[in-house]
Length: 194
Image (cartoon, rainbow, N blue to C red; front, side):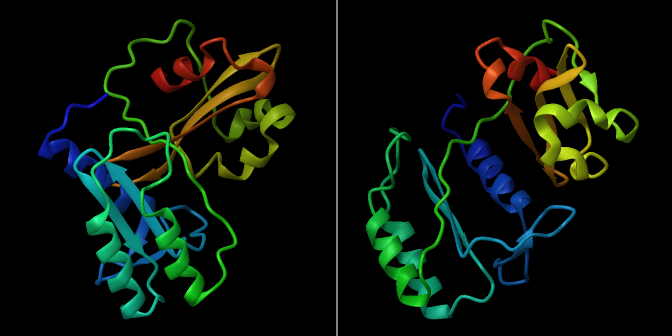
């Protein structure tokens, strides 16, 4: 875990800005991916120093102001396994604009020093992308766009993968996935270290 310092807060802010393409007003235009997917209306990231947030470009200014005020009221957090303290209030504001159809929640990790892989993962390129077909067929279109891309291969099939899903000058956001049948073997750590 990263210590609480300004440099780490700036890294987390750089991470959230790496996830999206942002307009001149700091609003979300699209995801920062090769296929530029629509961004969420609201992205909240909680840190020990406070909340970091971004809003989609088409949200009304009043709603953005109200969401920003709630974020400033959000308490600094140390228990990240719980929903934000003001979770219901964020949802109430967003529902006034449009129904909330999807909520995604999960941790973000920083790979500070993961060491060397126990077994060297395979670098995935377009030439050997077929290794993904058995367990990760939905990743096949991403191979040329999400480099570097590594996989743990067992019996000729990728069972765990790690690749750069969003990239900026400051941050590589890694996408990591292990097939459920192969979890608990340390494969994710190997592909991240790769």
